[in-house]
Length: 222
Ligand SMILES: C[S@@+](CC[C@H](N)C(=O)[O-])C[C@H]1O[C@@H](n2cnc3c(N)ncnc32)[C@H](O)[C@@H]1O
Image (tube, rainbow, N blue to C red; front, side):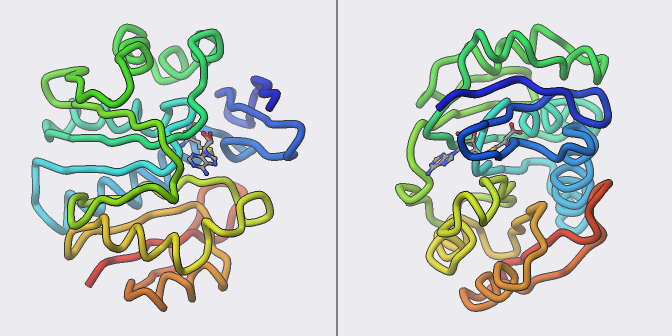
């Protein structure tokens, strides 16, 4: 499928798929959205409630690597160790990643961003002393991890494009992949998604959303 690089409201870029009329991030700002949903409501919250400085994260939809890169930056700032697994069936190409302006916008290391994209898939790679990354090229439906992760960054396409990702079967996979007390965060706030999360055992909170969005969801494995 054809993919285009587009600029979002905060000046950071994203990827747009014309055939699906779907964008990888909010048009109001890719960085703003990712920082709010995944870093502030996800990583910061989990680090605070758990006190852990060794945290494992599963990302559903590695895509541009923006969420992983923001997490790498936080791991240095907060001096925490992160083991990050990013799943994606349709990886972006190096030609595409070279057009992503995140290091520049974030005034962060271009070398680390490039390294994240250049390391091979299916192999655990140390990007920095605090941040290791395993990229797995597989369909979300093929995920089989059990009790392995502290946090799930749930960043699948929206329910209009990918409805099955917002139903019970997909959330049961995420529930199983998390450790007890682990959390899932997502940009979505739909009632049907919230009820599907609750049906598989999650306790779900509605939280203020990123710019342009009233609410988002955080689910905890009890
Ligand atoms: C919303 S985008 C992810 C954005 C990403 N987190 C980022 O920061 O760039 C959704 C991602 O899911 C991937 N994807 C779509 N359908 C999939 C499937 N069935 N299995 C695995 N990956 C899929 C796409 O390739 C895309 O990268």
